[in-house]
Image 1 (tube, helix red, strand yellow):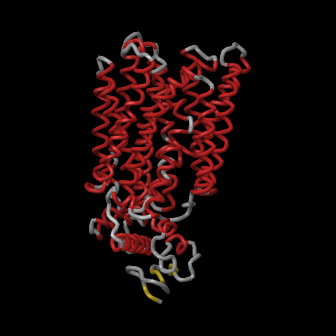
Image 2 (cartoon, helix red, strand yellow):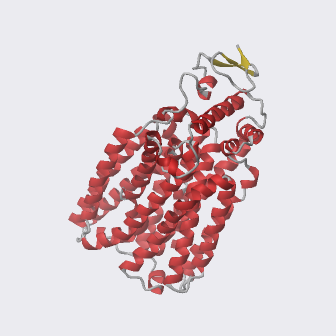
Image 3 (cartoon, one colour):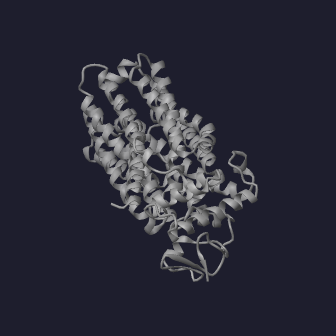
Length: 501
């Protein structure tokens, strides 16, 4: 197998297993909240139930304050290593918890580690993966969230019958395995070529590109063009005074527009109603009339498998129909089914009509499925695409802070809302989803088929008249540039290592 393909497989492995660990964590809490051995051990009430679920979001939000700068300072790969260590420390504390206070502290530490991973993982993958694989690689980063959820649901279902605290401690311990597997291959993949170039390590940057695109051949035409495109864009950012700092997020209209687009994903992925299911599926099913614990755990397993299938379908559509159309279709369909969940819960939630109960559960599946089809693959793909290099890491820090800040809000509010106003919670959330859909329709830009540097042109980056478009050259769409034999014929601009016509 060619060297570049092996490296790409390693990158996809790391992406998928990091996502598996994050998904396992979220689904584990949903499963634990169903287990009597867990809720009885900590004597949870409505407030402490919400707190132990929401505190991990708070930890993720805290990571958003500082981990973007750390990622720019020490490099993408080292940042991933540190995030894994933080998560493992939290997992050990979690599995050893003796009271609710210790468990809450452990969940906070796990949250910081998860938040750090959410920042540095997508940034690294966006910058190191070739254009052809960027959509799949970053989509898989969240698609396998459901693989982790499925594994967690199955493990929790299997340990539920253990007549001791090991019923919930064992699932906690298993989470650490996935984080170890996620980072074990990092020594065999390159650092981000864009980070290396920004640090002045130009030879290393060129070699990193060659490793992922041309089996290590540094004078490959496509590698040289990609390198020149990166250098031209970074040069423009330096000349215009852009720095890797939080202040630069708000220094220009273009930067603010980028941040608004990136953070719109944070809001939508947290506030669409999906987190009711992620953390409080048991309460939803209680309201729908499904109260048996074993049945709820079985539904949780099937739901995660269903969502994985729809997320993979969405990933397959990303580079066919585009990011923006997929977001629109997904948002429209999930909004419809969330309204239906509310209506059916109102009519059948208090009764014993089997058909009505099945209908409600079916709408829950369809809502979560259509959310997964669009927003699961887009969650960690679109934000790093629309953020340029200077603000990519710190922008993902803001993204993580807002996503998890809203995560704290909804995980604290939803159990209380479900208890107090029941089915009306879904109706209010559905109305909010309509506003989200309108924002995507009116404001989003399409990034399909463009390198990160070409996306910059949509926001006033390097002039399109002089910019080198790598994919256009490869596919023969650019009359001013062409690959000829082992060289590159250039009739506009310049390219390092290329011949001038």
